[in-house]
Amino acid sequence: MRASIVNLDPAEKRVRLPATFDDTPWHRIDYLGWRDMRAPQRAYVVTEADDQPLGVLLRQAPNDASHASRAMMCDLCRFARRFHEVSLFTARLSSRDKRERLNTIGLLLCTDLDCAVKMHSKPIRQPFDPPVEEIIAARRESMRARTISFIRSVSDAGRTTRRKK
Image (tube, rainbow, N blue to C red; front, side, top):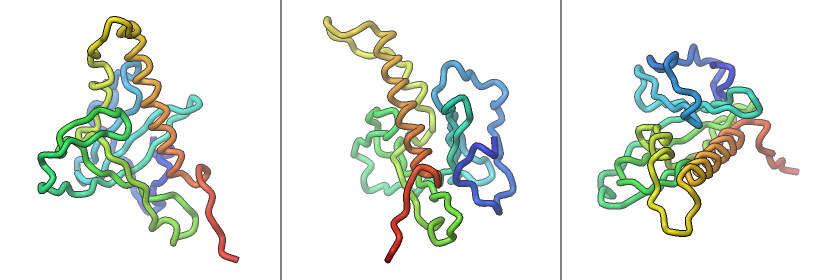
C-alpha cells in the first residue's frame, strides 16, 4: 500500500492503514479514504487504476467557521453539502526536485472521506430518467475517473514542468 502513494516523502516512515482495512467492501467502493489516527489532519485516498493501487497523501486545511451557512460541493462525488461537511485537502506534488515538492494541488472533499455512501443513495427520478442502477453506475464511473485524474495530476508522471531559458 505504501508504494501506491505517489507523493509520499522518502522520509515518511510508514502509512498507517485504517483498522477496518481487512474488512473493506472493495466491490462497493470506488476509492478508499481514511485518516491517520495519530495525525488527524493527514488523510489518504487510494483507488485502483490499470489493475494497480494508486494513492495520494492529503492534508486537511482548517475550516473557517465564518462560512458555516454556505453549501459546498465535493470535487469527487459532486454532492452539495454544508460547509463544515466539505473541507479543502491539499496534496504535495511529487518530484525529485525539492523546490517542486513545495507546490501543492488542492480539492474540496467530503470531510468524512466517504463519498461511496452518497454514490449509492437512491436518486430522485423523473419519468424519463434512466433506471436507478444506471444512474448509480454513471455516478460511480464519473467519480472514479475524477479520483484517478486527481491522483495522476499529483504524480510526477502526470505533469510537465516549464523550464526557464
